[in-house]
Amino acid sequence: MNQPIGVIDSGVGGLTVVQELMRQLPNEQLIYVGDTLRCPYGPRSKSEVKRFTWEMVDFLLEKKIKMLVIACNTATAFTLSELQETLDIPIIGVIQPGARAAIKVTDNNHIGVIGTEGTIKSDAYPQALKSINPNLDIETLACPSFVPMVEEGIVDGEKAQREVEHSLQPLKKNKKMDSLILGCTHYPLLKETIQHVMGSHVTLLSSSEETARETSTILDVHQLLANSNSQPKHQFYTTGEATIFTTLVNRIFATTIGNLNHVTIQTATITHS
Ligand code: DGL
Image (cartoon, rainbow, N blue to C red; front, side):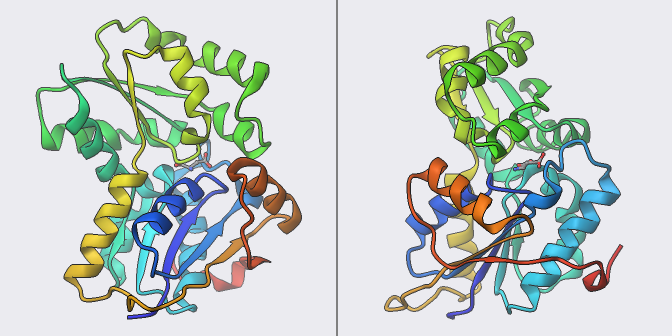
């Protein structure tokens, strides 16, 4: 079925999931919305994140998406179940896939999780991890400075190194932790710096691969996969400044993303609270 898959995030972070979706599902058309104008979501209230997420979803529903990938941990933590209960298309978030990826990798069941303030406060990761294995030892940490840094295009170099080093100090004290979940889709863009700070004995995990795998399975089960001869034209929307978004995307991904349009998600489109 050649309808598009919708992918949402507060900014450029969800593009780390998009990259993996494109790799694993090359026939699928993607429509991405990054709410750059209102990024970061991390420090915002649950009701605000819910409202913004619904606005993006309503925008995508008008584009007749066949499935939704919430490529934002904060939005997943606050809205996944509500969206799943309300809409009749398949919807997945990034938290369960991230938790599964970590459980596959840990040797000693000591797992760290870093994320936005919203994601960490929601306790969604410990709940997802413990629902799979109740005997895990989990340490979580909010890193509020990472998302604004990535949205500014700072992903390596001295400033990134200093900030990451400073933020991760509390976790570095945990000598048992052997795996660390990057519980925010912006963080894989800082992966090299985080790995350097944490040391090679800690395996870093992001949810993108597992999320793309799950998307593929869901499409298959629901018989929604695109034709193998389709040539998808992806579309990217930002609520912010299109030129800034494009420059940032090109800098971060070293690729050119076509069809970038500016979109204003208007308050008038809100139909849910
Ligand atoms: N990429 C979003 C996430 O995974 C970033 C949240 C934010 O905007 O603070 O949580």
